[in-house]
Structure formats: C-alpha cells, structure tokens
Image (cartoon, rainbow, N blue to C red; front, side, top):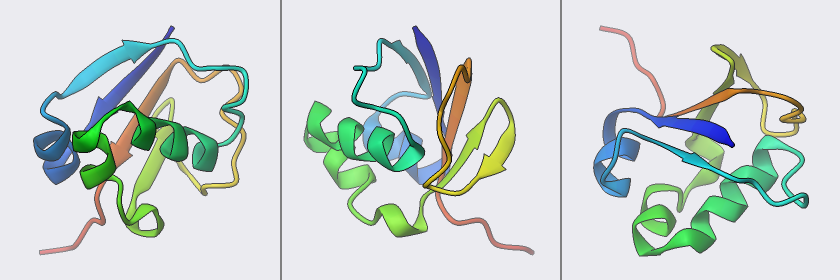
Length: 84
C-alpha cells in the first residue's frame, strides 16, 4: 500500500486529504501515477487535468514527473505553489 496525501485545491477537488492505495505494477514513475489516478473517477480527472502544473513529493522530497516512485511510502500531490 502507498499513502497518497493531497494538498490545497487538489485535496478539495478529489474530496479527501489522503488515502492508501495499491498501485498496479504498470505505475513506475510519477507521471504514470498521475495518469493512473485520473482513471479512478471524475474528481481525480478534474483535479489532475493539467498534470504539468502538479508538484509531487516522494517521502517529502520534491521530484520531477519522470522520477521513479520506487519504494516511496508517502506521495504528496500539490498544486503550484506561490510566495506571499
């Protein structure tokens, strides 16, 4: 099981702050994960419709979308961040 944690408007659109899921063996990279999540329902499709702006952290370390997920225990999914 992999723990997914959603933040800000990604959380609001999906309708939950976190969940644990079994990832299929075809999900190898962050990009694979985002594409897989979009197949889980309309709320995921809406939240992730622009994957190029989504930020992802594997075990609390921000990574690029081509990064292998490997044995990550927690994956954070964020909208773009701005300063203020």
